[in-house]
Image 1 (tube, rainbow, N blue to C red):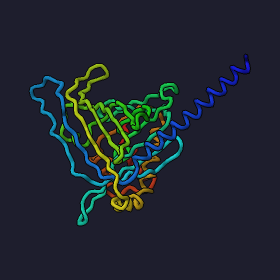
Image 2: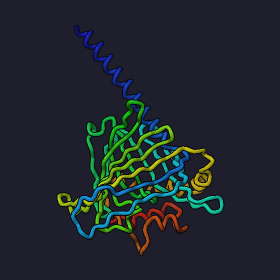
Image 3: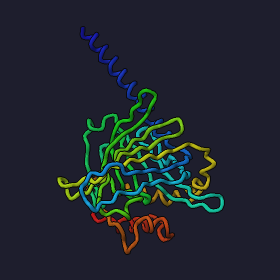
Image 4: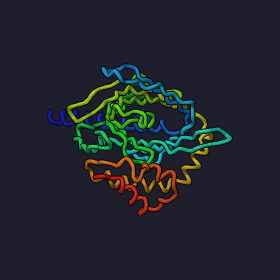
Length: 303
């Protein structure tokens, strides 16, 4: 009898191990399918007003013409994938390169920086059971400062592969300078791998947050961002730009990682002498080596 139970235990353990390894491989493949050269369009529309403010004006619909975006893997191992996005705007007569957002995916990650409000992030340590089988998506600003993070499981069912999560975030760039009536965007993100590339769907809530117990919901919005895979050659200029600049941005990431690894709440200044951090790093050539960049970044850290 004992040997039967032992055999059953070994069988179940082996089955669970094989299943988890197969699932991990499917997850990793789905994330890597978000890499490549894509034609991208960004579309947002405010759908439902949730407040009674007479002076409230809904946001106009936001739609962009298709542009090319390179999503290049800059780190990949069994439990971690980092993808840098680079926008390529313009035509043959004039092209502009924009270092865009970065997304890091970490398997069974326990350390989260959750956005509070007003450029403050709260560090949260999760238990192992909280994140079992899950992937954290960490999204960063163009200067690699924090944006938002969330942990959920990739789902592979009925021929679909998708990841969904709800988490608080700062205002998007399309609204940051226009709206002062709300200070937190509760983002409900869906990343789904498709036959044309991948889809980033959003169902967001605009919230005016006073503290942890007092907040007012102003409106809902939906977002439909389509990433349609195209030939790699169409992103040639974005790739050339990254090859020329990747060493500098590796330094920037390493400095931010030193800050994040302290595992404590983080507060950032919005600007220094009238300039935002990305303006110093992207629009000047004054900060290139480790010591210069670290001094600059630390000057934006309030605590």
